[in-house]
Image (cartoon, rainbow, N blue to C red; front, side, top):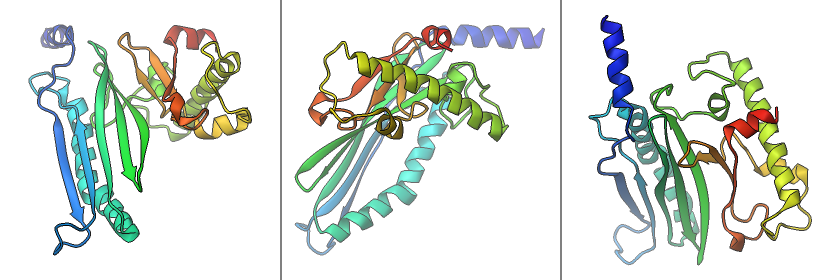
Length: 245
């Protein structure tokens, strides 16, 4: 009876989108010459989502970004600060996010990394997906898990690699066909071939979920077409992906 009541309560609690609270944000500045307030500096700022801890699934997301914040302070920021100090030029990296899916099953965000250095700004995008039903604390939900190829608690590394490769191959073939058809008229590089495409497109990493919970795969600006073409996206439904298998 107790188990039934717990499961029923959890189901009801998941009926709504994940409630969010104040962002997890910090700005860190390293001035190359501490005694000179006008000397060049490296600035690193991030803004991550924060789930309201009143929700029973909040810890799935919060533990992941808590780790990202600690890792940034302990490793990422010091290493990058040392690198940019060696150049003698001011630089900055700002990370912001957009919630792309928030329902009773999934929470997904698209992060924008904006790096400014030597008069040039570069954008790098990163997708994060979390399962509110089957997620593991501190981990994102992988593509093979989303497609049902693996369970979230799978510990067989050989099976994980095999199923990830299977999913990657399937998605690469599908997206490559769309590039060849090119109904949007995107100015892809004339010398773009499938070998080069497969080298920079990593489906297991380069995706987020849309508001319906379907994956949207993306190519970084400048990889397949000029940066002016922006972030190239390829929305696919889970059903269509599985039908192509």
